[in-house]
Image (tube, rainbow, N blue to C red):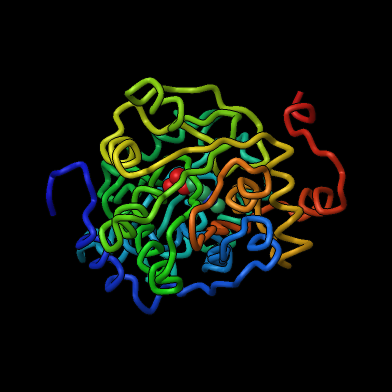
Length: 332
Ligand SMILES: *Cc1c(COP(=O)(O)O)cnc(C)c1O
């Protein structure tokens, strides 16, 4: 494995072999309504139907299956209250590997239960993510392997397997819209897609509330931003001030980044349900939302990714019923 910042197409192809059999090749559907709206063929990659409810299962499975015997015996540990925690828990337990997910006592009960439900041991530690991190450092000191959510070669390569599938599912594709937060997903997908078909445009979609990668790109180096309540909660969080891979890959491989308001994100969830008959979380629907809002003018056949479906169903119900939901107001 190279010490280079960039994850290569060869690493992604190797990851595809590694995860074969465990990871679903998710279906693709044509969207009639979005194709009419955009004036180009638009297809949806239904990755919210992946095991554990998001693509995070791909990177986590690649990481778990890449462990050596001693590492497998000692188990893995992660810090995540969301989809990475779920994906890692499912990937580890289905491979018979012990998994501990550390989180603070402020994390809501339903999130704790979801991660336990995937088979992980939940370690409740103090009142902040920092305290959770100290617990993780202790477990790593005892021999467990820490699996980070995005800034890691094996994670990026695992997420990049989606890029290979996208080219198989839609060989004529010219534009791809991909969610952007820490950048593991889009870095892997862009490396795969451009590695095989360099002329494809890869467009990142983020939310206006707390877009750390966008702020970092503007500053020319990783910076921190304030975390704010958003319907696209899976896109929250920083990119790490000591970012090793995703910042450089996103800077060099992603053609454009667009950002969405909360009403626009809600419109994506609403459209996916009523027009596409799909239940997606806020982050999962931002590609659809970007087209609906006219923030992206796609060139040629276009693939949108529905990246995740883990949304609180009563929140989903309110949004698809047409209620105007403002999480910042509700948090205040
Ligand atoms: C994690 C996540 C993202 C963003 O992925 P990054 O690798 O952090 O950019 C997008 N959508 C969903 C559903 C996620 O769970």
